[in-house]
Length: 419
Image 1: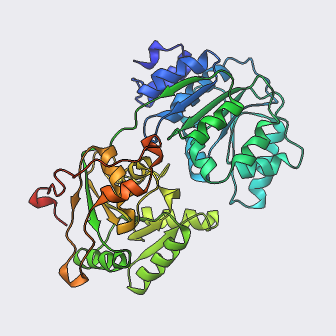
Image 2: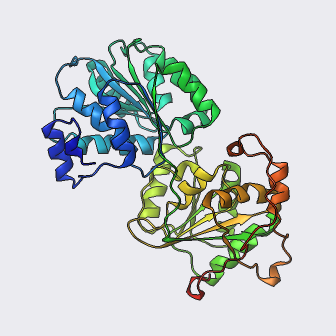
């Protein structure tokens, strides 16, 4: 469907045309008419499907009518991280280029001057406030922010916000909104906790679910079966054979990120860490240095797996298995962007075989297992089914699985694809 087939105002279509946006994505085609129609919406769509435009475009369209108070906060968009909030604000500015729609970004990690700017923006009113939960609540608790006339409440990456412990912050904000607020919730996954959360804040919502897409074929996906203690030695061996450049190494815990970064620094690699314990100014400096090539290896938690757009990442390494298949897709999706090719290597310890098996089932293929050099010692056999029996996965509907022997376990890539 084309954007000009939707009930969008001409100045907004002009802005889309200037950006060379003509065709809607499936999530945009499904949700924009619902939001324009005033429905609460719960939508499941991963990063990269155009979900930001799916909620920004109809909100901008409605605000441009001039029927909302100029001194009120008319819409709130909440996002889990400062980086995502910044990107949403930038997209809104681009979409509303030909329209008198104003926005105020509200997030932490800033100085006192920025706090005062945020305070004035909230007091004076804005069409759209784009905020992280903690910083918005900090302003609200000082009793100079009025949300009683807010018309739209949008939660982006709601699953990530709940995982990060923002439930109470979100609910405190929601309680200050009027009963007739239109609520729109976007989530990359739809576990029970998201459905329960949605029931508590949405009114008769329309549900939209876009199938989670598989990683692009331009990513060569591989795995290394090993013992946990062998991972750092394997990483050192990989980087010794080929000088690392534009590499992201993902781990699921801040402690492991810190330890791994320290270990790689001792091995004289040009490495930096990225996690939520860093101050915002530190995170921005690390990302800037990584983008500019002053850092070769970025060791990170999943804070980098969503909402960070760097086009020339050459290699993504999952030092440990992500919690969900969707997180795996988000992580390796940092490479092979802008029609480039990329590579992803996943380290799989014996205890992680069950979760990796779930990823292979989601991908509907067995990934090539890179052999470990003999000098690094023996590795465990790959028997994921027995671990799958012992670890009930939340995507299995509560049933234990035992699918028997695997087929094509060692599908090898072309010779030109070897490490």
